[in-house]
Image (cartoon, rainbow, N blue to C red):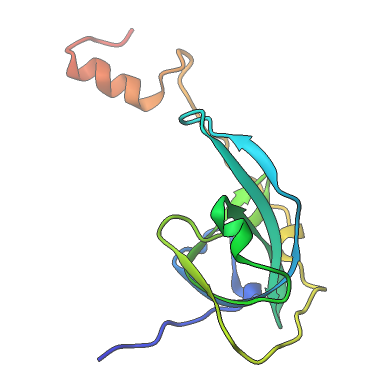
Length: 149
């Protein structure tokens, strides 16, 4: 027995939202920027699109090939997306485990008055030891049989 996925509304999203299914309309698409990955130095294209439903809007981050896959006015069915904080504001992401597809669904009005990405949230600071190793350095030292001073 297959169950259909449960879709949530944009206004129900929070910074902790994970495994989210949405049906949204693309109402704006921003300029493409080039960024360099701090992980491996590779170059990527990134853009933001404003997407929404009848309850509100949120900025959605688009990477590389996904930028060209959508246009203003498209209605998208997004599966397994998640919310992250970027500079203290919410961004919706498809990520590597999520998918989206354009669907032929009846057009709907988007509530642009409730922009979820305008709300600010405090982000906890990442803590590292004074020696710059963090937890993994401590683990590594313990495995090697050294004591931390």
